[in-house]
Amino acid sequence: MPFLSDTLSRVKPSPTIAVSNLAAELKAQGKDVIGLGAGEPDFDTPQNIKDAGIAAIVAGKTKYTAVDGIPELKAAICAKFKRDNGLDYTPAQVSVGTGGKQILYNALMATLNPGDEVVIPAPYWVSYPDMVLLAGGTPVFAETSSQTNYKLTPDQLEAAITPKTKWFIFDSPSNPTGAGYTWDELKALTDVLMRHPHVWVMTDDMYEHLVYDDFKFCTPAEVEPRLYDRTLTCNGVSKAYAMTGWRIGYAAGPEEIIKAMRKVQSQSTSNPCSVSQWAAVEALNGPQDYIATNNATFKRRRDLVVAMLNEADGITCLVPEGAFYVYPSINGCIGKTTPAGTHIDTDETFAKALLEEQGVAVVFGGAFGLSPAFRISYATSDANLTKACARIQTFCAGLK
Ligand SMILES: Cc1ncc(COP(=O)(O)O)c(C=O)c1O
Image 1 (tube, rainbow, N blue to C red):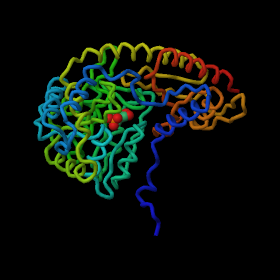
Image 2 (image 1 turned 90 degrees about the vertical axis):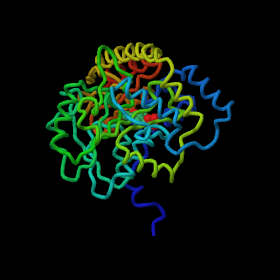
Image 3 (image 1 turned 90 degrees about the horizontal axis):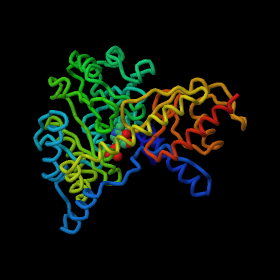
Image 4 (image 1 turned 120 degrees about the vertical axis):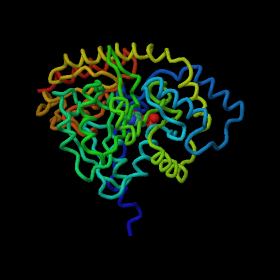
């Protein structure tokens, strides 16, 4: 009898975490490596949020809390949904978990039966397919293309839906492409969903606040109110408030699924960290002005990276609407050979050779389900980005 479960054998470890670990390992060995793999802001958590966490510790708010969140945080989340998205939720419709990741995982664990399908646009955030597999479901990929800036078209969504589809996972702005759907683009997708009443929407709005130029964020239940009863609107404080280590994510939706998610959480981790919950109350209720300040920095970095990558031979990079990622295509590099003699046959060999020969760590596109490409996280200093992109240019210029 095998010791490890069959389910586990269907799942792979997170490739983005693997790249970050490898870059850190090489740095620790004294190698000159620039890591562009990590999906987290390089900004510090704002002081008012840290102070709220410290105050919670001092006040002894260090015990178990209600499994899916303290009432104060649920109230702050309801106020946020009303303020930012025009959505009315009651605290009973809100679930708080240990990061956005646990929220999505709870929802899939609570709803998927063997054979249930989950439509995931590709390229996708690396965890969606594996979470679906862990929960016993079947991921169904709907492949996008650079022609539509990696945004799913209504026809592609329609083609991916079957009688077995339980969820459609929607992610805008997207990790890994940064693509954000306009109101009209999203409405075209919700129109498709209106024709398939058995399909629920899991919208991952993690990058809601990280949008640039004049892009206006929107979310499915806001664009199509008739979908409210079958939408789970997921979000969190990790990215917009530079709180990745605090581990607070949340979702709102019909009470039935919120209750089911609570049941999963009650038998796995119980409540998210009490101190982090109080810090998240401050994040959501406190001043929001640093988001715009951080975004000005992110936009400058995005423009820098896109411009420099487009100057590299064989690379084409679109300008994304949000998040802190770009997803350049390396179509023009495939089939070539590096100065050290590596034949570039896939984006994985490209990323490996780039790390070995130029000391730049990026995540290969295959990890996100659409090749040949790679993902850069530009949540690092301008100096690092300039140096890394110059090395990518040198690497590409050396391909024969
Ligand atoms: C699209 C997306 N959703 C969810 C998460 C998870 O966020 P958290 O760190 O709050 O678990 C991430 C983090 O990388 C993400 O990129």
